[in-house]
Length: 116
Image (tube, rainbow, N blue to C red; front, side, top):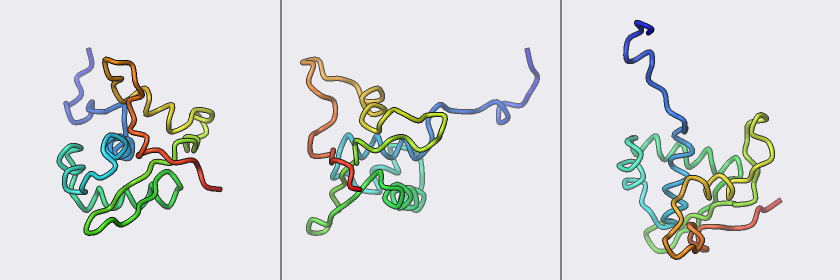
């Protein structure tokens, strides 16, 4: 067994970007504050991640009154060359639990076709 410190050996399977995207897919009207709480991030970090996701074409939003409503661009392929092939929708289908009735886990309002 290795004798590294616990900080050296801590790692996770998902990035903060993936965590934020999952929260938005679950609830397209979620507040930045609530995403931050769920993902154990600061609000500022969540805002930067949302900006990154929008600039990369994975997410869009529209203002509805005082809140934002997000749309995940489901047909967009994953970014890293080693992950080439699967789409965002395929990733989210794995990460989001399927309801007991077998319906789609993602609310249809969260998904939007890719704009090119």
